[in-house]
Image (cartoon, rainbow, N blue to C red; front, side):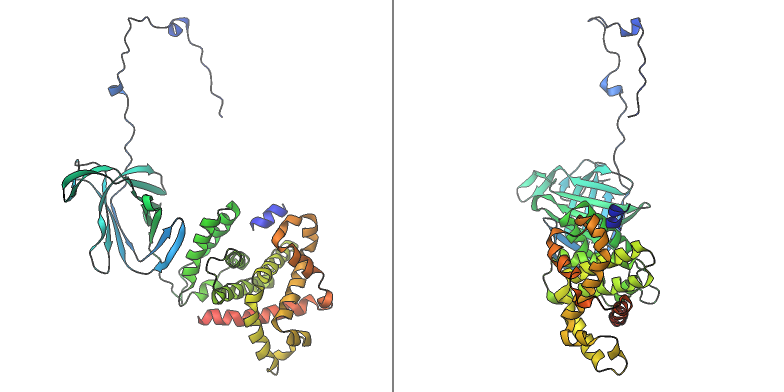
Amino acid sequence: MGLLDFIFGKKKEARTSMSQSAAKPQTTTSRQTTSASSAPKPAELSIAPFVFESNQHQRYENGNPVKGLQECPRTVKVEKNVNGCSGYQLKNGDGYIVRMINGDTGQPQMSAKPMRVIKSTTTEVTLRGYMVSAQTPFGYQDIDMSDYGLSVFLKNGKVTKCVLHMYDRNVDIEYRKEISINTTQNTYTIKPDVDSIISIFESGDKSLLQSKLYQLYSKLNKPGSGKLITGFSEKDRLSEVFCLCLQYDWMHDNDIREVWAENGFYCIAEYFKKANTKQDFFAAALDLFLICAYGKHNLYPKFNDILRKANLHPFHSSIFSISNYNGGAENLVREFMFFSATIISPVVKMHPEVISTSLQTEYNKAKTDFEFASVSPEDILKKMSFISSIIGSILEDY
């Protein structure tokens, strides 16, 4: 965890002296023998022509996702300009032709765009339009196509996604191909998304963070995706991601916040079961505190429902205390917050910055909520385990 890592834990150039004769300046009558035309030409930037079949795309305006994730086929084609392109007067062999095709209709999604490669690495190639002579109702006219660009992302030489840029409108459309979720073999993993989100959070880029959180939310908002959560091995990190969803909420929908809070609580309750070291317990307790702090009111509906049903059950009723039943979900959340605040308090005392300024009041209130001082950690963990088993079964069935 990035937070835990924070807590614990020119090449000199040789100088060659010139001989007197070499250092002597040439006379004004001498002529330079090397012409510009004889200098080596830089390697031309290029990309191998390809066809990328996308099954979903996301539109971004000013860096923010809009209109939701679109599940529909689109084809991105990049062809070498061999014989020009209809509608343009192009020099044969100059650059590439970029096409977007609507997979539902088979028709062009936009008109073909002449582009040139302006940047190339092993993982990303960027193409951009340029000034061309294009056919118009008034004949061929010079048109600046540099408002259009395309970023092509590669892995092991294969295209993984494409992003169409419309620079004049600050609009980007990300085309990607998602692997179908196989609920029996679990062939898809969300680990790259989780790792990316935590890395971006640590970099401080809020806009990009919300964009990546939205992408993960879209992936998990599908039938069968509950198994991606229950089967995820690093549940402490996944809990942090759900906590970030609550903290940097871009949806402002209570139903969605309830799902984030419940999933985050499930993940950290499961992580507690395999925590062995003091560092593990601190990490788990900090995540538990954050989930309860940011998602307090969003946990109430599920907790109240569980308390109501447990109270009527002949065996499960003994899991919770009378004060839990009388105080409801609010009492239960307070108990979990006292438990977590007590565990992290020694570290927070040495490193106050662990708890953000906005949560200082919540933290101070939680660690002095001595009504729960007599409740054993074993009983609290038993309650958490019972709740997580219920949420987990819901995720498995989703």
